[in-house]
Image (tube, rainbow, N blue to C red; front, side):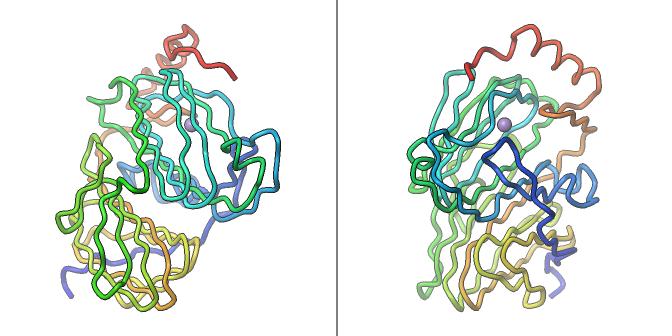
Amino acid sequence: MSNTKSVQQVLAPPAPHMVGDGFRVHNFFPSGYEMGLLRMSPFFLLDYGSKIEFPPSDTPRGVGVHPHRGFETVTIAFKGKVAHHDSTGNSGVIGEGDVQWMTAGSGILHKEYHDVEYSKKGGPFQMVQLWVNLPAKDKMTPPKYQAIEHGKMGKYELPNSGGVLEVIAGEFEGVKGPASTFTPIHAYVGRLNAGASLDISLPEKFNTGLLVVEGSFQINEKEEVPTDHFAVFKNDGTAVKVATNEGGVFLLLSGEPINENLVPYGPFLMNTKQEIMQAFQDLNNGKFGVLED
Ligand code: MN
């Protein structure tokens, strides 16, 4: 097929590292592989917390108060529960199937911990954290918090009880996702039953990747993508075929690239060095608000 969006590379999960004491993540990009800072733009970072069993703890594990400016952090829960608090007063707990879409914009302080009740019991934990860049004109937008419960996702039912495609953002076959985004993005979670397949059409120039969260998938009747692997697509067509023998869960991300100069520095994602220095100055001057540890 001439309009196939073909797979460029299937990436194995890089060695994990800890973020705080609560998140053991594989960084697929930007640092895990030399894909270039803008290769997956508007997605800047993908930290994947593959499934892990946390023992019970009276003190929730996690990461303490830290700032962000110039982008959005998106947390997608597959197992376990995460609590979030930020300096605008927003807070929430997300569990299996839920998504937290936080716009840091002009600046925010937040902390991310395992939910207290989950911590006491312990158990399986599996998450994705994604950093979505903002275009220069929106980098200083006011902070915003979208808590998107599993039940609120757009749902496309596959024929023949093949499973469901949940639309977080963008749309699929007329089914729209609840997340509002600053640039065009399609984000789907596919939960497919054994033997199911699905044809997905995505804009040719959108940067696209597929993370296998459970089971394994065949892409375009060609590449096999096992659990915890990430397939990066070329920008050479529109048609993607996803199929699974054993059944499984995938996360598909596809977005219009933001072709602007990017200067990442720690928790900030800006367009110039000057703006990074300004971010530190504003942080030191208390412009990101206040949040207790
Ligand atoms: Mn954060």
